[in-house]
Length: 493
Image 1 (cartoon, rainbow, N blue to C red):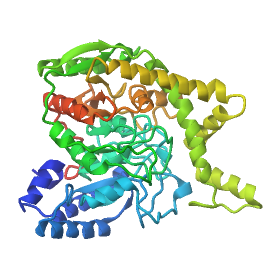
Image 2 (cartoon, rainbow, N blue to C red):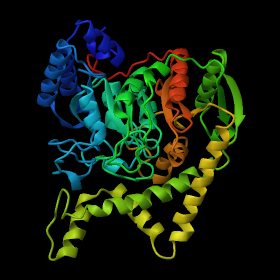
Image 3 (spheres, one colour):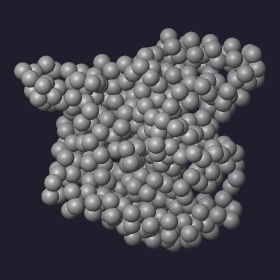
Image 4 (tube, rainbow, N blue to C red):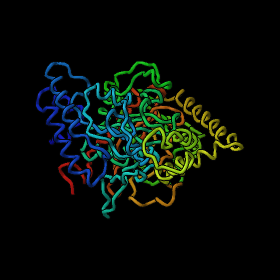
């Protein structure tokens, strides 16, 4: 097996046994990035020299008997995490020249755990999108292909991270999930990804999109690898007022628990009209796999799920319009000079933001405007509270909930571009978890009729990621998903 095909868990074993070195592992991945990035565009910024230095440090630490949890593991960092001395663009022109003088808490924790950063992964501009085609630095191509040869989207907004992991350019990656931006691209590229409970990972140093919804999480090729990464990323941070002061469990150990005796909820409201039969069939297969491993299947109801997308597309743009007000050409990033201060603001923002960001700023400004605040934003928050109550009532009777991750497999670059509402429907199964703040994970579980990966989603109680990992690992074992993308390191076409 090539070094590039190793899981993080296997690579850590090989490093510990001195079968490979961190420098060798890193050089292999730097070569993969150099070979594939011109095609896939998964990275905006590459940092090979820094990666080599970190790999040497990892080897030295291991030789000294002091190797932390991710020592020597090459990863990609979504370009939404501020990294000291390394450009952080958020996929936008307006932050093109921005080099943070500080480190985000999550990236600092991963560095402290010995991870090697290969570079900054591409994303939808300010994490707004479900396709990774709104980045100011170009679209990312999914390493999977359809038989007709059409280039596919990797999902969004963490599409660069997902493509890098699926194509063996990185062993794992960071993502952020505001409405499904870890889970949907994970499903589209045949990898695993978890959005932990809101507050589990610090948001300090992450460029904000919608502050009450954003949450960092890991993406990797196995459930266990996600557990290893999340253990390193989690923990209380006094610099983030929404960070939860709770102990970090052994997520990796939870992967081996099994599901015997667990009660798994199946929400009828997720059987949406027009859902593809293969999605329905995969969902039923997941139900059967868990039942065969000793879980009890229980019907549950989440009656306000149907309001998830309308609520999300009021709350998220409202918070985005507020967060993005800081990008005015004075304090951050790019500037376009004007005749006076107002003209400078207008020219800078007109040139700096892309069409999708402008659309969401306009929506958000409208729903927050005088006369409409109560009618839209306040009402949306009330419905959001009802959705949280739905989850609380469901979790009074079940330990986890099983649903599909996305209503379809990856679509072609260019499809749906002229229909933002259809694009927004990609998040129909993932958005409710963000609005309720509960953890949710996507696991690769099968292929559609065109050979493209599909995912199943496991949703858990607040701060019960251990059960999510236990159920996800059980699905992973049963599914036996071994398919690989056509475009990957060592096999590029």
